[in-house]
Image (spheres, rainbow, N blue to C red):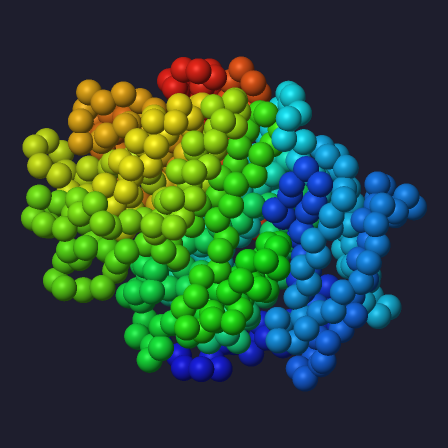
Length: 508
Ligand SMILES: [Fe+2]
């Protein structure tokens, strides 16, 4: 069943992309905004063998492009799949802009983006969405279409933008293709997603901060250790490098993430995508990378690779303090950031990461069964992180996550091994855009077993919206009525609020 090099989209989908004469059929996007800059992205779809292409870009105050702010041009190179990453500098803080690209006689769709407020600015409000996990054949991207109406300043995407899997047997929509293994495979899988009009529309609506999880490469991979989906490849470092390159080619991230890595990417050098941004004095936004540098999972059952759930008491290395989720360098960077005065002075400190943060014991009563791929499998590293939040007096930590295809809402504990330990922050782990949950009839039992969580739901797909003001945050869980229908509606599943200075989640 596993495919080799060159296996990609089934003929129908490939023909659809190739025969599209519109070079901007993959849409536009913006991301990584600061108070003076933003990254503008597109990727030209051009016939095979096409050389470098000149792309002009325009940033304007108005959607007619009559009041131009900046223009420029750049080269879309075949070696980077004719992707374009323009880092526009010198913009005004805290304002909306329109942008578009021109190549030959083709003009791209228009995008809308914004800069962040200046670091010292007093800001009344920030509205962001958190989302993850959009397996193509598990449903339609209606969530993205409805997200356009949420009046957002920012989207944070926390991982699993693509999946490396072949078609699901019970697919809602086909095709996605075969196993994704080569650079060409990854490019085609991203292109498939980027061709979706609902996803395109949300990319064009506001800037995104993007991270990744395992499926951008392979299920359950960890650092330089391969995962467990499909057949093993001969050279995992090369596969990871190809996957990272394709991620870069399709995401609105600055070129600096690639130039740092380009020379040695095939040998496993890093692509540094973790970063921290400030939204005035209202919020800091730290996007973490909990996949690229993590140590391999320990004590996976039956000597297999990847993840499993197990009794940690039977695993000698479970609490080994040498093991890390973020890697030593990112951990040090994070602690340095958390120690800065701005971390105490910001009203909210948001940490976007990949998975469920709080402990989730699957076993009722005495004893534990924990999942070794999530933070539970890196308990010492988790305690170091919560310890740093406490030690540096970080104001109002808010953990955002994804990965588990279920909504979980809870209080972040200083030490999950100690039920009396204080609450140091709050956590909102989002459901998937489309990816199925296994379904979980045991949710009430799990909530009782893990009382630091106050809400969980495994049934619904969607996203969360968090509105921050200096006084409080409000999180609204939005879910598709039926992810298997292209015209699905959207509903509110639950709403929560937290007052600044008091890490207690109230359900409203
Ligand atoms: Fe996922």
